Length: 115
Length: 114
Image (cartoon, rainbow over all chains, first blue to last red; front, side):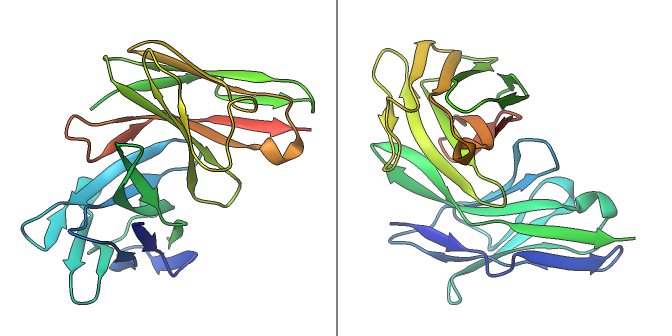
């Protein structure tokens, strides 16, 4: 089965500093990788995806993610954090169950950006 | 992208009762998905609901506890039956994008069982 791991429960960063939220994956075959964000009291929002092509993927709200095949990682990054980026971030990998494409989510990382 | 609404947005229920959560999508979709997010946890898929057929449940979830209806291509309901405090969670409805890569989620239903 496909899986992703998010090694950090929480990441703290000061506003204006670069941020990184880590994700590693374990898949058979080519990975389809995603990042989602969950703001307080809201559902998940899709941020970006890696299917194929450039290893650096750009997404919504200034976020980007770097696919690294040798390290089996797909870390989420942003050059300059905002307080409004504080949220729960989920890494996910596309899996197949019952004939349907289903994302399998990591446990989530809480990002806290301090003013 | 799809716009998904859920009702209710939150509820507080007594143990032993049941709650039905509604999910409405602004476009026709083949498959709808129901997830549970327990406090401080990741998302766990409960079941996949296809229109016109029985829902497909993941391991650990059964139809008697979580009956699902899918009467048409834009609507689904999930019932949490005979609730206990362990059912306190956020329940999320989801649909797949056209390429079946990304998914779109409703705002969730926050359920508290006393």
